[in-house]
Image (cartoon, rainbow, N blue to C red; front, side, top):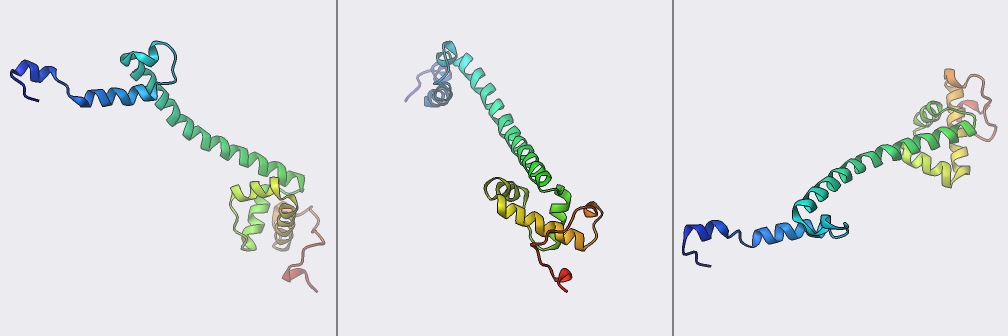
Length: 148
């Protein structure tokens, strides 16, 4: 395109403006009313929605972490052991499972989780941890120190 004057050059914004606006309008396609069609309103709404989406991704991680903590707390209380004892006992037995896997096991594999709590309780009792003093040792678990 040839510009005959400086005024015409300044007025021509080129195809970039079209595609920039199109990108915003595509993001605002599901909005209602003028927020969908009017660029100045659409860009405000889209920017606000993107800010909320960023915050939501951060909050989702926090919510899932709290949910896993609550599930683990309930599952360990059901088996008569606290989470610290479970984690410490499993670590001393070289069973390295994170909280996500433990929470999933407590929901979908309750017998496997019960076996893990028994192992952790037995190991904690064997190592004389203070938090297991009044719990009885499960009879189904055999560890090296308890075999006579």
